Image 1 (cartoon, rainbow, N blue to C red):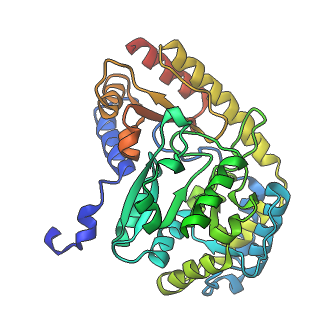
Image 2: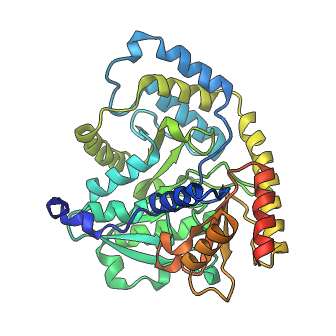
Image 3: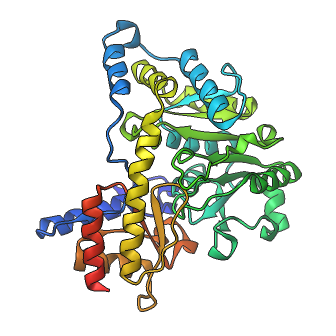
Length: 388
């Protein structure tokens, strides 16, 4: 039967998280008490006022019909107000905000909107796998922009081959960054805007960790830079900010022409976001925001627990200023990130994500998530310490 699959499926690498989940289940079947630091899925519950808004909206028959493709105007207005108050970016809710079934969907549809077969997309490496995979699904060519520690895990725009830059149609970016937890300032985004203007490239900035910041750092929006709205859009979601990963609601904001391209694809593939979920999204964006600071206090404690525990085990750890990830170099005695991850799983029952799963330049690192309660993080550190 596999011979009937489209060739593009053969070009896709195995989806990293599915493979990790399979190995985790195998360990659990052996009776191992597995501590999963692999996947970044908030374990904290969605705030009660958001859940209550959904329950009430779900009872309203007017929400039981097909939703609009672009999303409820009230939701888009809430997004625009949120961006103005938190990111100092002004948006027209009619033309510069598009509701998404989670930002992952919008990212994938963007490649279909702007890439013809054989076109080039500039993709950070290491990165969230969807950027590369969505490019492949559009029968296009992902070209890596290496993210190295020497450059603080930012792409070196000057190092991009001039012919590649000339032919590229899209550039994916993601700061605060998954998997490296790297952060940037507006000066970096200014350089990106200049580069995009020079080479006529559409910039797609993925910003789901915008509110998960620590130690006084505030993550800027790409759109806060002068000229950014002329060349790109920004994706965001309620998943990480409000613990709503399973709700599947996000948005894209910025250049109206680019958003229209994404919407054109959406109208032919999906039927929009369930209106009751959008009502809950309005409650999230316009309601009390102390849930964000409450989350951050918990994540900060967890981050420090994991950093200190890993340091005591002899690992070299940088304390991140954003996201809920740690990007940790593997010890010298291990030849690959997969080898070290399997060592931790099989010998300590601790799941981590090998860096190679995020791209060629992720080799030599593992990613760990703090989406577990502090006691489990402490136990994971004890087990790793006992091994190393």
